[in-house]
Length: 329
Image (cartoon, rainbow, N blue to C red):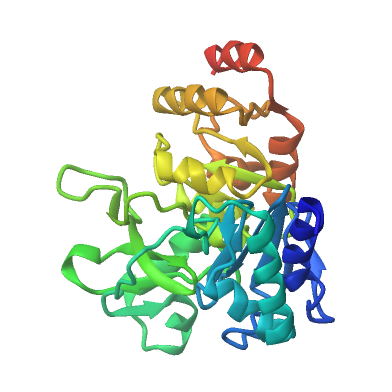
């Protein structure tokens, strides 16, 4: 067996047995329902990058892969059999591979490392959409009114309120990853003071808000914002502040999509712009009115569709042009 034939056959252990119901995303993933957990929502995917191939289920977390000079691992074999390959065909290929490959270690069962975040429990909360069903409560009504004023819709995202002392008068936005709550932010509905900061943030290092929605998405563009509400309003992702750490960078780049940063229009936003330019990301400079400081303000003035289209239209890729434009903010 030729080396190139071996690579093809290792790939075909998986790709030739895909379920009838599958689709290919612009990022190169072939997505379908995971046979390891019997998920029905198509949250598993295979991606081939040159001779390497990787598999991940975003529902159960099962992940495996193969690359040249590596033995076929047990998890890879198990997946192939679950998809429909016979035990005999798997064993035969393993033996053939041993004849032509020089292995540098035992196995390489996982090619792509996905972030791990610990599940957390929300404090005692009430979903905003349930407020009209409950007895009148002035504090609850004010939070619901705040959400409406920010143009947040009940269908956009899960929004909560909490009567605990530290979280009172705050809109609670949970952080999801792999269908689990891994943190939350509480946004105060009133202007911040020394006693009441704007945000109470319970987040884990490296978390990118809303990114799991994009991993198997057909979209070829991801818009990055600083704030969580900004991300919700345009269905983007948020880095939860004005800096990006290495883990966040790896997650966003691993999407294999066109990345556009839409920073807040302030001094810290300029620091984020410099980071994005160094990463090779595009930065958007829409010609919004001077009183607009962020995506949320733009949505209030122009609406969601015009805001998002202007972000994409005025995205700049050239580093020199990005530097020039940032000085004009």
